[in-house]
Image (cartoon, rainbow, N blue to C red; front, side, top):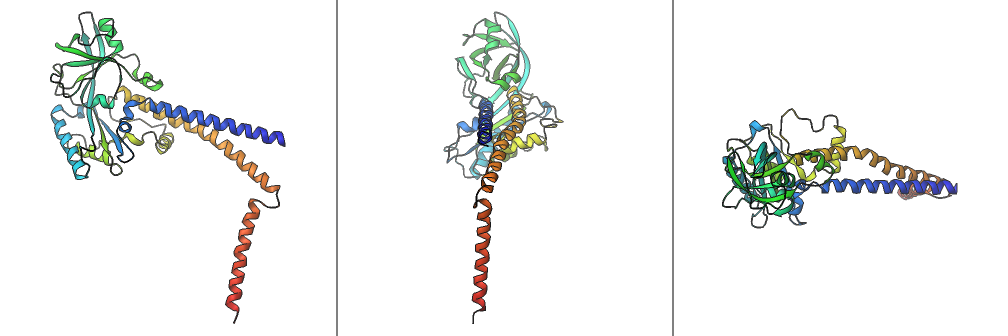
Amino acid sequence: MKWKTIGAAALAAVCLIGFGICHHSDVGYVAQLTAQRAYQRWQTEKKPYAQAQVLLEEQSGILQEAIPGVKVSISAALTDAGVAEENHPWLFATSKKQSATLKSDSGSTDVELTEVTGDYFRMHPMELRTGWYMDESDVMHDRIVLDWATAWDLYYTDDVVGRYLSWNGQDYVVAAVVNTESGKFNEQAAGDTKRAWTFGDSPGSDLQTGYTCIEAVLPQPVKNFAASTLLGALKGLVPDDTSVMDVTNRFSLKSRLDALRNLSTWGISEKVIPYPYWENAARLTENHLALMLIPEAILLLIPLILAGIWLYRWNRRRTWGLFSIRDAIENAIEQKRTRDYEKRGTP
């Protein structure tokens, strides 16, 4: 019996260690999704923030001219909620992607070009190799950010800040060279595609093509405030059936359980939405975390079952124990009832 007890304890310990390793791995996968954790970089214990995003079909994208009005609507909602902007800064960004050919004096290459506005690089802080990000306050919106593979294809080096290239017959200045996010699912989603980023109102941009991704990091004075505020600001600009995703709780236990219950249809949409690679990475992570609930539940359940068996046997060997405690409570209650009855019957 002694060896059985030792074996059961060892099995329970191994299962708990396995559960801890799996949980730590899950936390690591989420930590690699920097684009999904922008709200964490702004919130404090006294100032909670939330992150919301809307993904649209290409024909439903919002135009450049509509963006100032969206920002005004968000600002008004914050004021109405009593959240002063000077004490609660917020972020807003839009983006759209397309295939493009970039040309330099040394050659040309095909890339996935993402056109952005607002605080895109604050929400997507890719690792800088050289240079610095573009910013909305730039006087000229003719700068471009390249990933390292694009830089090497065009110039055979990543030390290219300040050099020129062309797109759509317009000249651009290289602002920075970046590494895209590392990590298993980021790398799977990114693949071998070369990437570049420029302003949505840059010289070569088509202003009549709408932005298909709208993101915001906002104060969260009450539940669902960020998501409802973003959707409200887009009212009349996007289809009525447009849904907004609250990224804040995207990888919570409840969300993982929902994904596991609906795994066969999870992520399927009737709409043709051009997901950016970082959104695909997030969806891969969602599926992985949902499936990991099964082995994690088994690893956690085994020690609980063993503990229950041990308590049962331990109680059986004693003249007092769990059952006797229950009986003692029942006897005490019955004795009190008897005393109360006798008191009522006494003249």
